Image 1 (cartoon, helix red, strand yellow):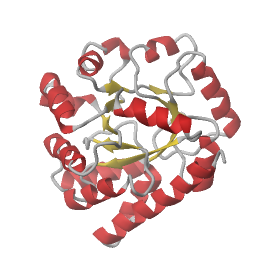
Image 2: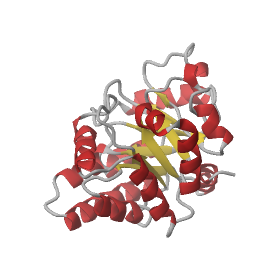
Image 3: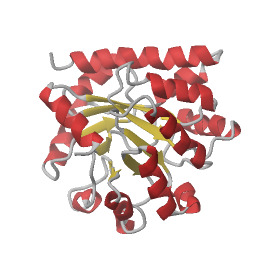
Image 4: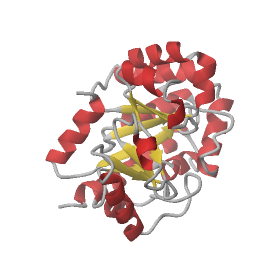
Length: 269
């Protein structure tokens, strides 16, 4: 059983959803980013998505675009991101960690080398937003052959005819993007999310996690009643953007994570 499968099985027994947190590797600098990463599990994160900085993050809104710019300005790159995963694994062997980003840096690094290094570092899954299922042989198949889950994004515009293709080869969890647009955009209605999750469930048994536009404990709790996971990214990254110091950034992210976790954990009680 993979770390992702184990975590979702464990949470199912506890009758609660996962809090999935997203931060960008190297934002605002390596040391601060690593301190945040290491602190997230104790602050209530059940699964961590770690962004691989890229110059053109086209699926992301202003908050995560700026996080990418800050990280790249601090000299963050893919080798350093893999090193950050190794550093995280020195003290945490149980929390699932997923790398999220775009295909270009992976292609430049070399797919075979990347898959081997990611597995060795302790990566559990990949979300590569600009690589469609028609190109599974490029990265999805080699990653899964190495024991790394490949997580697909589905959106409000992914219709029933397209869904089986998108879900083909998906593993770990399905990431449902609840609004059409970029990260950090306005949130969807709960009725819409409930219908969308029910539709996905007709096509797959994999856990469904819902993201985009979730910023508060109350919003997180509402989504936690409808899906197996709640994804929060931009709201956490805003804590880094507004921080006056490294310590403020760490405290801001972990403090909000605790609030979100309390919302998620209390949602079904």
